[in-house]
Length: 366
Ligand code: GDP
Ligand code: ZN
Image (cartoon, rainbow, N blue to C red; front, top):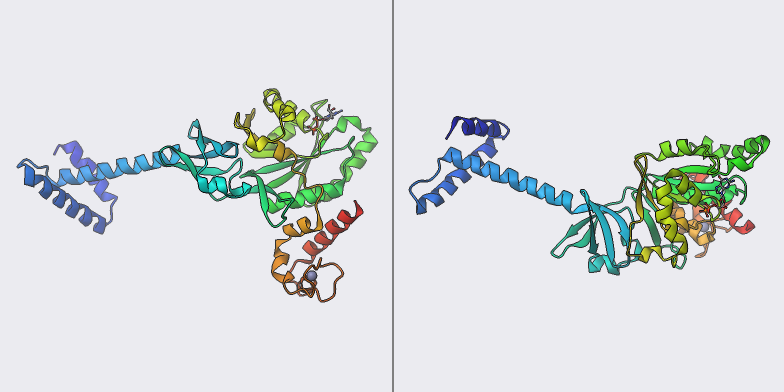
């Protein structure tokens, strides 16, 4: 064994625990015995140990490389296929039959997935950090995930036409916070306001700022506020949601002119974004912003929520609701309501309960 190899072996052995070293030596001796059966010129035990160490390292590197190569983020999704951004390349592969058969929320844009098999299939969805979801309109206990692993949800609201309605914002904020992403209020069309109106309208958002939600007033016409928005989204995966007409497309245009061209088709297509197979819906914008934009995300649509849907967001009520005297208890005015009881004992946060009542009341006001 040459000196160089000897020292390489010494270095590697030094990183092993005593028992591991002994095990390695035993394996090397066994391997050497096997070779000796066929030939008289077998490597020394030291050489054998070095070979074993080297092949173990190569195998570990191969495994790591395979994981990196076949783990990635869903940037495009259709009913049966996903386009996955893996370690520098985009792969489009069919969903495993288990994933394809499951409800729509089994896989969403932004999900981190693992591809496996030959031919490759999207088999595993890794745990989600956050999600943007809404209750299924047909069955509110089922959650429909529109996008996964997003850092920021920009809630776009117009300060002018259409006029802002803070109680609608409140519902959207409930849904956003439920999914764990950070909400950001983007207040558009400031250019349409007089200085007095501007103070008044932005003032209506003070309550949100007081809760720690950032508000960025901006205008796609004058460009005001766009640098702040860009800075807030830099390095993040984000989505923009809001009523139609509040100025989302104009904002995207302002953030990255090429993006607007790419998303243009969204407005003219069938509106069935989840089923498009062409193109990606996770865009990379200038300034390291990654943005998920689909008709489904745009029509996030928690503006109209039924009482049942609102209730779905207050999941901590569920364990108490079984104890209510009435099966269809709304937990508002009914007698012997276990949820109200839990609020009185402090088991449910009174602030959360007040929030719930406020949302219900606004629902009735519509
Ligand atoms: P979306 O439906 O949310 O995508 O809204 P659009 O971006 O299509 O905007 C709706 C309308 O509002 C269009 O006529 C825009 O030109 C206008 N608009 C959007 N942003 C601004 C703005 O900041 N200032 C003014 N004055 N008009 C705007
Ligand atoms: Zn009740």
